[in-house]
Image (cartoon, rainbow, N blue to C red):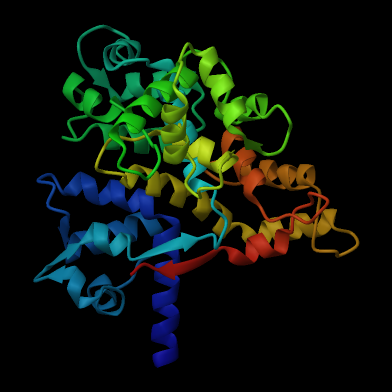
Length: 365
């Protein structure tokens, strides 16, 4: 009995994690007053419809929904769906995707008004879901169709299927993620410099870093950093330069490394609701988790010596093959960023068992 109950619970949790975004969409359509709750009956109907799994959901509810997630005959569905997630261990690649998506939108839309006009294709003062999705697709921002829809939902805060100018400005008035000190002057100047780096050049931040790193040391010395900044028309006293370095140089090493440079000038979402980011990353992780056995078999074909490593190009082929099997394929941008962050040996070959074994479902505290 206990073994069967545990097996049922684990299977449902597994399926819910794989289909979390679709379940959010289903329950959102029922939750017209935006309470974050649905009835137990509606909760069961959603699982039945999305998971294509017919069970006595009233009874199953007691097995999989903790008491703190229930209020009488209702369930806090967002909290239920976020109770577990698909984790990728120590591989930190998700934020790179989000940062690049934000930056691509920012580059195209230099200010809120210009951005709104870009998306408002028919000029009627509102942006429909269709207009928004169509415009985002032309930007090649690194999201697939399902993920673009998820982003659209987050921007349309009042769920009326349109985006007003106010809603749009609240989301796209982006900020720059600077250092950790309380130096307001340094923060303001870094924001200005970051804006110029992003708007007055056609290069990615990573390309800019390597361009400025004249001695290929992997870090920017003060001379290299301020030579680049002077190209933008800035001139600082030695004391001001020290204040700026202190602001950006988080580990106080006296130089600016790659991560510090990227973090200082990253475009971030200015909205308090970051659920779209997590939902998109869970879509990607879910596709990898569901198909990790398939990926393992593909990698084993490439790894004829059973060494546990394969070249990056072979793993790319595996991911492209996987895209043909899933409804929410990984974009080229997502594949590139994933490959950059996978565990590798000294030759740059990917340690694929380590990555695939790291894909697992974990409970969120």
